[in-house]
Image (cartoon, rainbow, N blue to C red; front, side):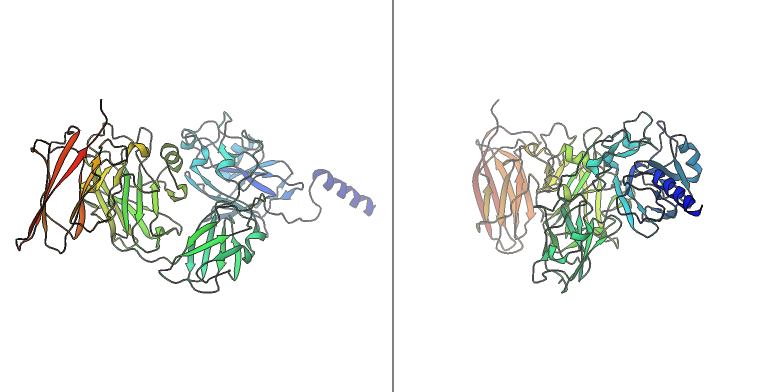
Length: 575
């Protein structure tokens, strides 16, 4: 009789796919395949957040004592629930479980971790502490501006491709706004055939470097030290280990200390993602030890404060120093009508190294920026939930360190735009010279039309060259055409004086000898620099095509005086 009972129990468990003895789940056996972070305004789902789990394995798992976490708060599933193969269950707050039970199986839990509307992390752990699946979702994953404003869920397209992010998620197309408790409305085949990319590194201390990838990497390959190589006599790390819960970061322990002021390079080979794709050409990243920024180490380099309708502002920063600086130590802010700082936004909540000669751009919508401008380095876009307010006519943008010291500040004005720009919407304001004052209106102009009216993440279209020929006064170019096409739009009068204390005057004459522009009047000169002529007269009117004479006078208080007369051609299109 006892044997017959045991046989009956065995048959029952086999039939229902519930293991007779506990089976430890492996990563990705159960996946988070739907996320509902923003229930308002309601479309057709209950007004409460949820996540959905799908069992993609061939065995059933009891979810009792499994944990859900958003990185800051964690809660445990207290009830017994067997999740069958190829089946779904909604996890939500205890108060919302009745509402979601109308759509399908639902488990209500106390202390359900909140889901940030604009993006965050949510992950699932087994009772043994194994991270089964983790998702770092982002608002851009909706791929629909209307649906990202609320009421629609995010759905995974291919649950056999659990490691991919943006490319494997989108907003639900179900009329209810989501598909809790059933197959996703966007379900389909969407294989991961993309190699993992080494995005960057950051430094924990002088012997610990974190390599950051664009997706989770396979733990076995990630833990092989032979797959990593540093230059500058560092060599292969002593150890390598993937970092939970996302496993898109690998911690590398070094045999020697990194030195301040030194730049290092990390090369990664043979590392694979969870789909088995091996890292390809994008396998190199800089590394180094960050230091505290000083005034003007980082400068405000480009500002889009008047985007096209339904567009987004952006601010670009440039590291003009020879230092490595952590963006986590930098804050952007605006000023209110009393001059106080407001709208403070930290550039990065995580360590993010800013290397010499690099650019970083902050915006509220990276996808929009990529779609509307010629972004050459998408890795250098920092998407923030909000950035300082940038009015369309004039305003302030301030860059501060974590102690509140001002690193750079620009009080911009729309009048700094190129005078012949008819429509300022969507036209970024670019800095002309990294080394000139931030508040000099002559050091700013409109981004060139040929560059798409903005150059986020790379060199400005109107960047001036400070190369000196050794002569006191030079003009470049000798033929210029101020049509805002990004090619020789300005005439630069470059100067170089032998010692401090010189004063300069610059006057532009037409071919008949009449003065048309007083470009500089008793200006105290530095040892070298330049002045910019935009082809306009003193009334900001466009001058006709032709030959002009630049008269430059320099003198000092000792009575040393020199005058230079040089011709320049103002060109342009013939109508």
